[in-house]
Image 1 (spheres, rainbow, N blue to C red):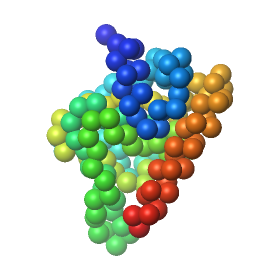
Image 2: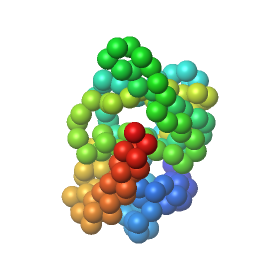
Image 3: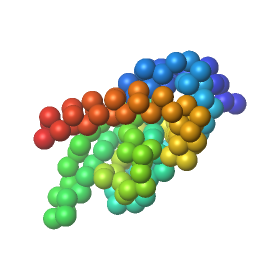
Image 4: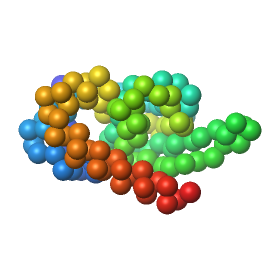
Length: 144
């Protein structure tokens, strides 16, 4: 059974959603789905289409990118309350990296279609979330 209160609590801890009010968080929480992955399983795969945002609620995962020359390198580690795949909320582009489960992982997923549907009735959410996405992008660029 889905516990919306616990989903709201999880969402409120995610930087992307911190500026949202409780009603907005509940709307998002009602759209989340849960999925489990086994250690070593690909959660998302570089070069494939993306369906949405993933929030880790159990376990650890690692983002890995394969360069055109075949060289692989780790981009990021994810643990509880970390999120990835946020670009897929905004467009239908291909995944820029793979994310591999490094232990058994449980994720909450918000699909692009559900997200866009909520934004149609809560457009002010977009401004709050885009500001956080811009901060995240700037931090990523600083590491290059």
